[in-house]
Image (tube, rainbow, N blue to C red; front, side, top):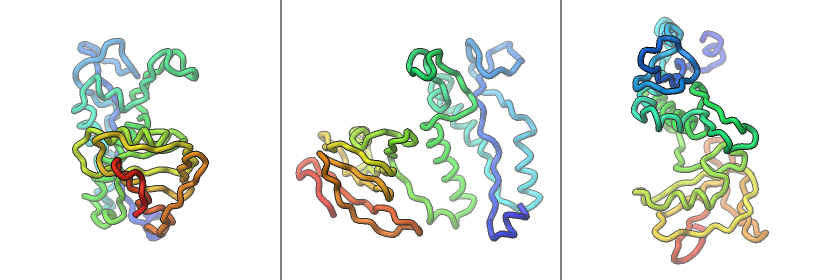
Length: 234
């Protein structure tokens, strides 16, 4: 804490996210997974969770109880649905992991984004000065697998059927060789391209309006898709 403050930083402390441990009835030994899970999420961290809370109190540092936030998240999702957050890999689905995998400790990409959202919300509440730096997107497209989808079209398709009138899609750096079309009854789509992101339709690279944003050159909302008029810049 002292080193961070000496360099002009403002430290914020968190404790660990919850481990997905639905202990079966009658079982007392904590394991990484169980043949049949129980109905109640049981803590596995013990006093380890309290160390950052105590340090934060002693040094007057903001503290976020990330364990409680994720405990409530996993409990609310339930035994079955909460598996979607963690590295549960079905057997026979991927060549690199033919036998499958059950990991109740580490989040997958989807879980990481959900928990990151909880963190951001908690940070804005605990440290309001950070709120002006937050930029939210409904979906993220990334060729390296770090987003919700690999292609822009997949993200556009996912926007259909929701209640929001406008959907924002962040496109991370990479070349996306695809023709993006609008499904019926889709909402207004706003694409935000990071520097280095290109969408090529039959070899044609679309020009984009690039503007400075928060100290970095990122693409402002560059294209709006309208199913009646096609694609146009604004």
